[in-house]
Image (tube, rainbow, N blue to C red; front, side, top):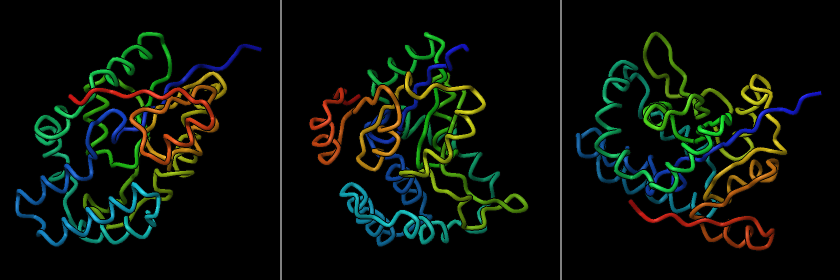
Length: 222
């Protein structure tokens, strides 16, 4: 029986990008006058709770997405290219980009696995030459956002659930595969791959990685 394929899964925020894509998107919306200062501050507070692994992500997502209900999909997609070039591309860690391209060159199944949406992740994947994107999916009806998420959200154990189809379709051998992440919320996926790589870890993940003797990498800010 032939062995399964090797995969390299990459978290996005603070792993490939030096900043959080959600914060960048909030800044973009604020600068365009689409949200007010109180909305920005409220979401930044939620981000701090997320970094401490104390955020109810499902509740936060449901509340946040209510403000996007009724937005045109065409309108959002139309702005992604400019948003990527202006906000996202300058935040890519050169070391992370090199890692992605190295795995691709080795013929591994490379995927970006992120709690962000396709509006952020797909332009990044295209730039990096990555063929697989696993992310949080927003519900759409008649070309407009409903304000809901297609369950499960791509976070914590939800990342594993969303990855199952790709793992089966590409015959991935998890014992020979890699996952790069900065966040303690990604422990469930780090635990099931043969090669967990902790990149730019938050304090909680750093402590856990030291305890488990996982490789730890720090990338220079772009």
